[in-house]
Length: 315
Image (cartoon, rainbow, N blue to C red):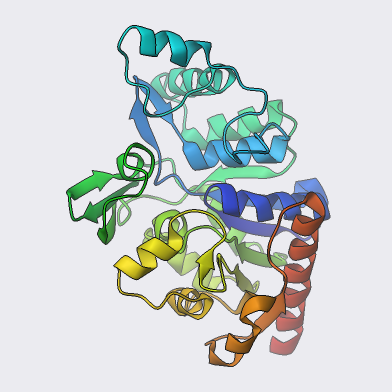
């Protein structure tokens, strides 16, 4: 059975990962997830993007926020606030169980990849959910207020400081999860899809590992990126703000150039169709906005059909 690999950050990437999961035989999908956002909070190891993928693929995600669990309760956070605890990062009661169990198993010596694949299976997920590495890679944001750990910039400060640069501590030495390398080297691999996550905050931590970039370059399957920018605006998150502050052109074409050398094709939104001729790689134009599960499946199917056309063209 041919497989598909999705490379994903948080909410935006998880949408397309869900579309691929719904459109294909579930066991044929591997989702490689950013861990650059991981951090320790209240003594617990938190993996926000991995957890977003976990809840999205299991059907447990909050449909309004896009992150966290649906039907969540907040008794823990309310009690913590009442005794003067730190509540800037929201931990719901059901979500807390995941962080406690992950932390317990990590401290017992288990690897993050093993833990998350086991938990994914317990929640009924048939796809392989693969953290990018068992080794720590931490996103640091250099701002006009100094260097901030990612969650301080993103959650505590709500992306308000002006970004000067983004760095990934540990990226150069972290080892890619062996299952990830095996998935990318599979001769039967159908496609590698870079989901519409923030290129600079969510995908670049994955690409900061030299093994990962080498594996993408060596892969036989077409590598397709799906735009996170439509009409000069981000579908979700601070992508456009960051591009502006880094003095980058705010466009889908700039995102394609950012991935140049790694991708074989780019899925562009119909609103930006006029830009297609300026791209460094072949382009497929479609409506990329994903509001419903049907939207997610359609974008997934069109992306895979595009990959197949590129594969046939290269033969």
